[in-house]
Image (cartoon, rainbow, N blue to C red; front, side, top):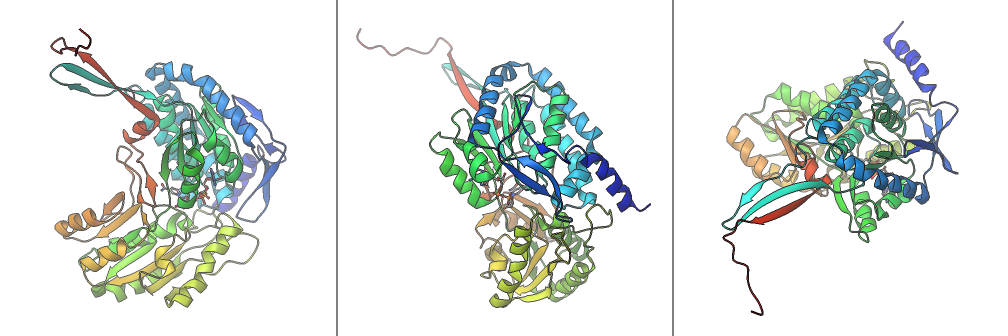
Length: 501
Ligand code: NAD
């Protein structure tokens, strides 16, 4: 039996839990349905997987109240105990990683070769933040001449977490694990186009011993359920991953209740390849970072800036690689690009073919939509682009790379920084001084030199400009989910000012 058939058989077994039912919300440890439903469809063949309860403001209200009621006990639970529960969540994710990967592939169109790792990354996120739960309240001691200042941190309260459809399982763990480790309770609103693994995740957490109401999940559309969450007075902060324009809307919606916000938004990330770069490694990394995960990836290298001495050779090599990419069924381990998430997204990605032509770019590899019911698309390579073209400015969020030429470092930096976004950057050069100088000037929150994107959990993750507000990872996550308090204790030398004596 082929590996694809084996995966399809396994998937059929796992999908039984979704077929023929309406996927409910999970509020205070109970299943809750709504009057209205939406449909979850697979991008592979457009088939309906199940109906999904479409949450309203009153569902969000119930979830926020549950999170509020559960907050004092979760906040006051010893860190050691929280750590144990969160490690149990990680163990349970590992135990169900194959199931999670198969369902995520079917629900999002992402290739199984990447989803298996993404499921395990979800477990690692829980382990990393579990290990910090005991020390999350730790602060600093800042003595002055007459006071001993002690800083502590306390969890901010119930928080709202709103996630997108790209690698939804991994991204949900990345936001929810630190919130729980810090002592916050959670209302999660997953993306409407990929609701399945959010359900698995909350079931896993409850099965691992998470008390009722600590984590609640409401499905629904952004403009209704998402909006209600951002406006709810019991919710103290919103951690959001998604489009920059949605971030602006959330800021407006949350302004009445003075929400603290943390945004991980879009990107148009440059890979900058200098003449002295290691050609083969740079080529591998540039191809991997845009064509893996269907290009539906915030840190994808969607622009490649190549120095003139290498340009023709590099673009020719890119063309060969892109023409070789294997588009196909995402459950086939050989597949490198699966179907895109939704017909609307497919239409957006392919609409840039006309845009590029009108703007005068060369379409080196033309990626049209595939045949059949699935939302398949072939990969695209645009070449000879210039910085003002829309394909060089806008986030396309598909398997689409825009190649541009530069002559010197100053020109490369000007092109790299000429976009609204500032999430990630990739620099390829063997000149360490130039690498440092260039990275220093690059407007991005995260830069990799001579490397693809490799995450190390203690390091800060986040973007500048239209790519985000705030950082995740390491202790940065706790800064967001917690309040810092200073306690100043007079040492005795301090003279109290007197009035009216
Ligand atoms: P999106 O902004 O359309 O939706 C994200 C989430 O926000 C969904 O759950 C949606 O229901 C909700 N939402 C929509 N409108 C809302 C509103 N008015 N109020 C509250 N919630 C609302 O994004 P998407 O299309 O699902 O995801 C793709 C985007 O996410 C891309 O731009 C990508 O770059 C970005 N992203 C960024 C990072 C990062 O770390 N910077 C990571 C992953 C994805």
